[in-house]
Length: 85
Image (cartoon, rainbow, N blue to C red; front, side, top):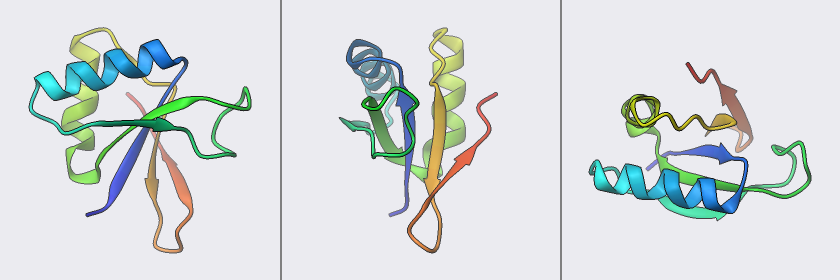
């Protein structure tokens, strides 16, 4: 299973994002953001299956929740940013 990360600006925002996705049937896991992808040093993100990324972004858009960024794991193990509409 390949994962995607949705970067959130605060713990509360990440909790809200996770809850909305779970209510929509998308498994979501709250975690600390990996070093290097946050601008403020520390942060939180929501991990989902990469296959659910497009649907998750649509669900969040309808709820007026916009992640600060979205990332997927590259073949070399690095995180690659993807556009958030």
